Structures are given as C-alpha cells and as structure tokens.
Length: 330
Image 1: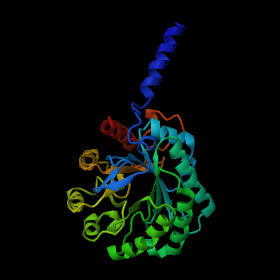
Image 2: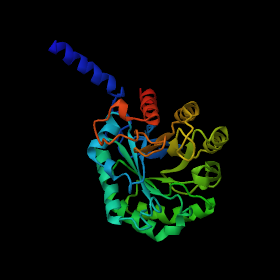
Image 3: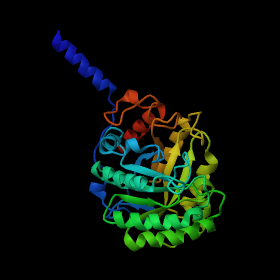
Image 4: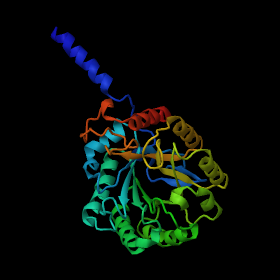
C-alpha cells in the first residue's frame, strides 16, 4: 500500500510540473557576446540567435524575484534564455529611479539581476524604462550617469544588452536620436562591443520611421512593442516595412492582453505575432514576471513563491509563454 501511495504521489508531482525542456541552445555559455550581423541578432561567430524570455515588472515593486532561485526557474522551468530588468525612471508609486526611488537599492538590483541571469545561463536586458516621462531627454543627466556607471560595472559580462529608452512617447524620432547620440557613446566608451537597443516613437511602435533614418552605429537593435488584443495587422505592417529596409528589431516587450495589461486576452493574435517574429528571427520578451493583479502577469495573484514553481502557479499568460517557448525552441 505504501509503495502505491508513493507512486501516486510521484505521478501527481509530475502532472503539476511544467513540461518545458532546457537544452542549452541560444545561451550565453554557447553564444557569448551577441552582435548584429546583416540586420539580425547573432552569436560571437555570426550565427543567427533568437532570444525568448520575459520581463520583470518594475524593479521597485518586483525585487523579491531578483534572486538566483527565481532566475533558475525562469531559465530551467519556463525555458527562457533572456530576462529583462525593467528599471522605471519615473512613477510606479513615485519610486522610479529618477523620481524618489532608492537609487542605490535599484542599482544593486540591476547588478544582482545580471549576475543571477548569468548563473542561470540567460542573457539580461538592462532596461531604462521610460514611460510616463515620455521624452527620454527629461532625465538625460541621470541617464548619462547611470549608463556610465553600469557600463563600467558590466563591461566584462557577455550576457548583457542595454535598452536605453523603453517606450518614448509624445516626442519625435529626431528627439529620440538626439538622446541616443549622447547615451550610446557613453556606453561604448566603457563597453565598446556592447549590444544596445533603442526605443522608437509612439511607445516603441513606429519602427518604420526609425528604419527611414537609422542611427549610425554598429550593433544596434530597435524596439517594437505590441499587445495582441490591441495591436494587430496595422502594426505588423509597420514591422514588415522596417524589416524590408533592413532594420534590426527586438521585441523587448509584448503581452497577450490589451495594451493596458488588462482583458481581453487574445492568444490567437499573439500566435500570429510570434509566428511573424520567428519567421524573421526576431527576439522577444513577454511582459511580465509577477503576480500583479492583471492578466498580463505570468503568475497567479495568490502565488507567493519565489522558487519551485509548478503549473498551478502560472496564470493563463504564463502557461501560454511556457508552451510557446517550448514549441519554438524544440
């Protein structure tokens, strides 16, 4: 009888565990420092690479997940090979990096996150999360100081990508370019081979505009963001236009919900988006790894864990992400 109970327990645990494989493909340990070759993300030898992963919620409200145990599960249970560290510059309860937040703690969270990602064989995106502040030049001096410091501290890390402005809005491409022309040389002074991601106008949707007048640097990617219940064929056409002009693109943030992060969920449209990204070898990160009370969050609202995650801990969005990574990786 005891053997039967043990066997039934093993079956139950197996049923509760996410069925995601971890095969080591497209990982820092294999691919090293990434670069852009012929408009696409590539490894140290020039071979095409696709990163698939998830973004944090704002670090100021998601610090509990910035640890080695959580990152191990994001890598080995969810199958992600990239994690995005969203450092809000303004807001999130008025505790953004530039608006009253604990700068030292937030800076250390970024360093901890990069280190934890490296130990779990994932790439890490350092995301200067422009949002409600709109124009990235609003906190230009803070950005200059931050990227000077962080690029010095991370210059020897092969798993780091720098995202210098998340979602610029209410400003044009020339304004964003003027900001990038200041920040990119600061990063490259300390980390000359770094891969840098630049946001595009209109909450990182107007990649077609950026494609018509790109920046004059190597190893740059440009950001497109979408939420599948809101952004459909019109935005995909913008992406197709940008790709036809050779613009290197990274979808550093998307959701399977409306653009608010709320309902409805549209998995069918999300699948259409992912198929387009995969066809064009475009890397992507879903928003977001948290238990926030919104359907875009990957964890259920009552999940208090920071490790040993099971299927029952993930939301509908989280389970979709696990299945999608598994499908596209294998």
